[in-house]
Each structure stands twice: as C-alpha cells, then as structure tokens.
Length: 163
Image 1 (cartoon, rainbow, N blue to C red):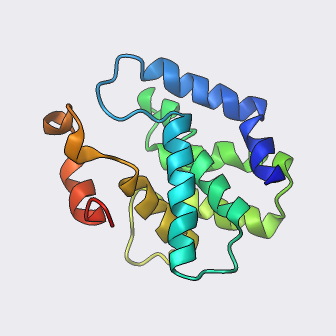
Image 2 (cartoon, rainbow, N blue to C red):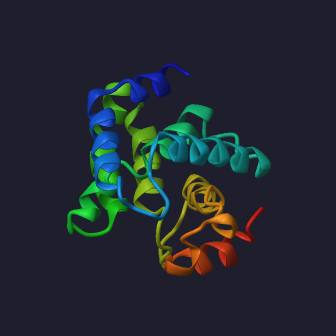
Image 3 (cartoon, one colour):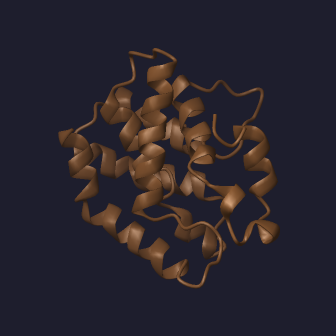
C-alpha cells in the first residue's frame, strides 16, 4: 500500500495530526489521533469487503479513514465543522500520494460526508462505509466521559454498538 505509506509520511498530514493532538491534550472525550484514524481505515475496508464492493480499492478505503479527521483542529479553533476542512486539507495529500483524480474525488466526497447525512444527497459506498466505521470505532459504552458527550447516544443507536 505504497500510496497509504506516502500519506502517513506526508509532512502536511503529520502536521495536522500534531495540531489535533495539541488541541486535544486536555480533552476528556474521544481523541482524533493516528490510532483512531487507523481503526476507522481498517473498519472502512472491512465494511466494503462485507458489501462486496470491489471498485473501491483497499488503498482508497484506508486513505479515506486516515484522512477523515485531519481538519479537526480547525473545528476546535471555531472554524466550523471539521469534515469539510478535512476534505480540503486531504486534497493535496492525496495528489502527492499519487491517487488519480477520479479516486481523489471519491475519497474527498466520503471525507466531506462522513459526519452528517443529507437524505437528498447521494452517498457512495465509500461514504457510507466511512461514516459507519467512524461510529463503530468509538467505544462509547465504556467511555468515562459518556454522560457529558453529546454524541454517545447518537453513535450507539446508529451503529448498534458492535455492528
């Protein structure tokens, strides 16, 4: 997975992870670190395999998962929802990693759509898998900050906790 490795070692990608880490140091809720991103990447790929979705490559699934929260730090700074920021930041990273424009478009759309679902908006299998994987990656039922979390109920109901 050469393109995925290029993402992991991309300077801009690493800077985004560092900015997330700094702004989440005192956060009692979920963190958006590499461990979370890798878990989402793995789950996204597994969900696509279960759906027998063969036109989305393993590298595309992993890339969407690894990049979906890289703009979280912008949300913490009051710049709006992180999904759009993550997609914008991911564009040049995907290009440097060597993805074709058609692959980039699919990955960027999935990243931009991973938070909220507009029923009038078409979601690709990658978009659906990424959104579900992001929910499944959270172990809300065992979180010590569950009572204060605004997303715990939404996640546990939507994801069914464990599939």
